[in-house]
Length: 628
Image 1 (spheres, rainbow, N blue to C red):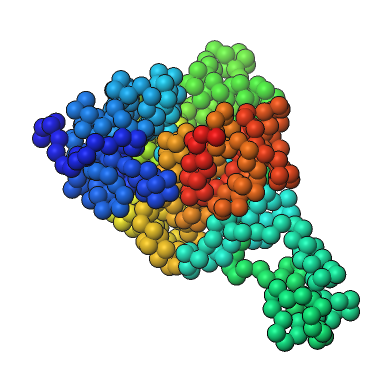
Image 2: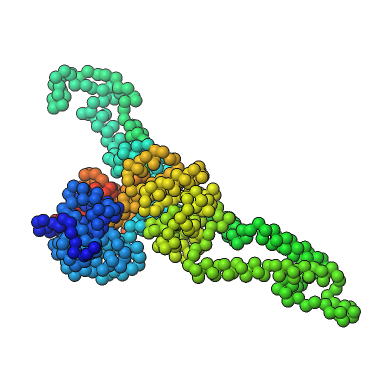
């Protein structure tokens, strides 16, 4: 295969377009975001038009061209008109390849906006400083919190201004909620969910009552409704005909709590601190003790060691009884265990200066012999610990592993999920078939047990202590593999919670209908909106999941010349898909949550925090770049 490239380059000169480099799932979702929500021309550069998601990308209406090059070379960048493009997204390839491509693109077009995927976030921050207009994002880091939270059965959170935003459902919704983010939630039919539905304000009921009972309203005191006479139209004068009076049923009056939409409801709430997984020290100590038992897996070895330990304790008790001195007994017992005891000599015994008594000498002999038994076992344990680390192999799960989360797949996403759960204090066991996977070294460094091998899932899950697990997260790159792991886990432990990475929405819908105590997430669905917003210049603080739907938390700055200047909350929210949850004015650094003044207009330097759907944030980004 050469690097000359082939495919369908733009037939006509194109400019002010956006370039997406990649043919994976993230590239597919990103192209959909740009075409459907931002309505911008997109040119896609893929390595092979017949593999991965490239065929589906070609079928997307609105894609200007799909160009095929095996590598992102200078010639490939010229073929996609890099000189006249507005933005470039690098969402496939290694960190090194993306860095090289980003620097090459800047050389061709210094003003282009560059967004590139980086697993090493620290390196990405340093590369950002080398680019005039660039941003480094990690798709796995964006999606991992949602997977970790789903594994524990709780909502993930996004930190903004010292508060942690999360989504609460139904009975968990409190009175201090920021806004309703979804309604009509039906687990059996996720297509009925409405994100950021139109909501009446707190005063809507009072306004309606004032209109009903006002001088010109249809209701008179006493619950009597006035109806216009025959021939009276909506524009007819109220005094043109006599009004008939009809009793109004009490239940027909609108009141608080009336006419709630069917299905469940979700709301956005803020917490002062991020919720932590409660793990007390007794459980941690129990895990450590049981984990140490992994070195004594042989029943014969356990029997020998327990017998020796019992003999040592019995001999210790004899020495203590004879000497009546606990400190001296501990001292002499430790010396005997180490083989450093001083035996009585015949001359000492004849002179009556020996340590005293046949019982004491017998006890010391027993302790010394048992010490000989313990020494090789301790040596073997030390050699095993040091040897496994030098061989680069992670340790296996112990027989005492309990209440843990099993992470299937140690790619980019699986590694992030395992790290986050480990930092939260949750026991983790990983499963991986490839011994060269990215996350193996990370798991070994953190001391996370890993089940390596390519055997059947049933056997692998048994080694991962499935019967004692609390949850399983399947995050490999293949939907079928993830589903197989989830079904096998549910077969082996009907009570285990399963969280599955699925790309296909229809597949996920059937998954929700079939399994309870389960969740499904899509990495590309969670990450693509953040990449698209970054490509347009917005700062997405994080994503929150409402089942398979995504809510974006973004912070926008009102700059000179921005189309946001002069707009108020009505202007921003009325078109739909956006809720302003906090405002920071230019003259102060304080973040005002739930700012009540809906008529105040934005000025240069103000910053707003919004909860938005993908289309809502796309609309705001479009306004953001308009010149006032």
